[in-house]
Length: 97
Picture 1 (spheres, rainbow, N blue to C red):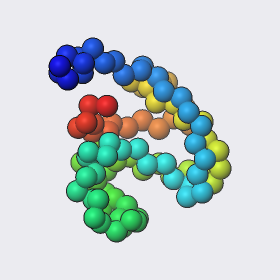
Picture 2: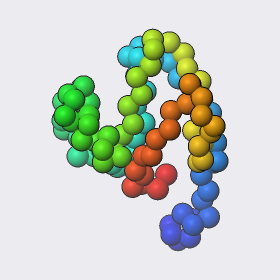
Picture 3: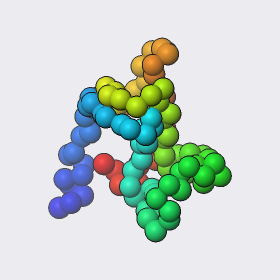
Picture 4: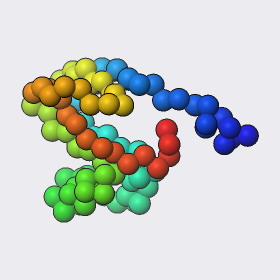
């Protein structure tokens, strides 16, 4: 039953939302891919070696922002044309969601 539901589920081609941050950073990840970090320090991603390891494994994308504030975010399945305000990345998605 679950298999047939997953086959019919289609992710949206585009997902827009507004984000407020006070850390000047957006992190994009699938929780299943970082499950091994569950008992790690809450700021493990600020350790350069740990950050680089997870980024290279495509488990997380860490986007440094120019300042705290409100940002409009848009996720798409395909890449947008090059522009200064576009971040392009691949992220592992083990959960399939």
